[in-house]
Length: 88
Figure 1 (tube, rainbow, N blue to C red):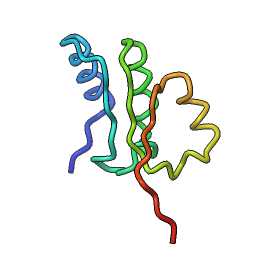
Figure 2 (cartoon, rainbow, N blue to C red; figure 1 turned 120 degrees about the vertical axis):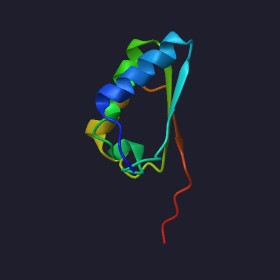
Figure 3 (cartoon, one colour; figure 1 turned 90 degrees about the vertical axis):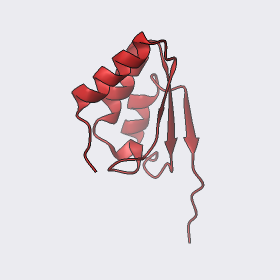
């Protein structure tokens, strides 16, 4: 499973915006499977934000206890949906 580069993601986002896309949904489809663990997440959501698009992230929220990450995404994310997490 090959990961896209940051430049490829940015190109796709720019193209989608040019075609009238208003919302980008980010899920954990590729490695890492948790989107909040991806080192590409912040530059991607910042690009989405600069294009006045809405970002939705589907996450299991395992890293939301990291205050530094929460502060970085606070002003550029409109909605985060949590998948059900079960602790045994």
